[in-house]
Image (tube, rainbow, N blue to C red; front, side, top):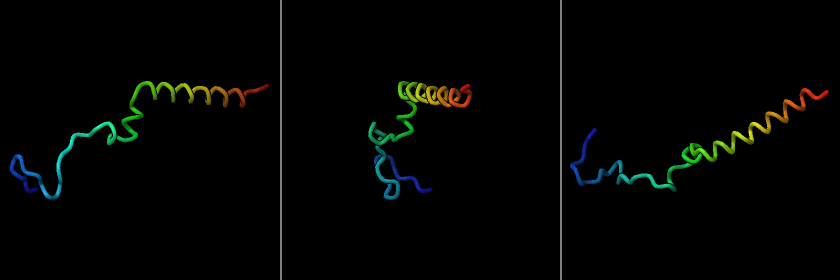
Length: 57
């Protein structure tokens, strides 16, 4: 692969811009602890209600 000299922009790759908060996407949002705790809590509630419905006398 051809390397461009330092300081020049490659015409194929374009400028390298560090990712900002807007370009990180959904997977970055899912990796945040408060969101994961909330989703785990909701999942636990759904699981408990499903088990309760299945084992109702």
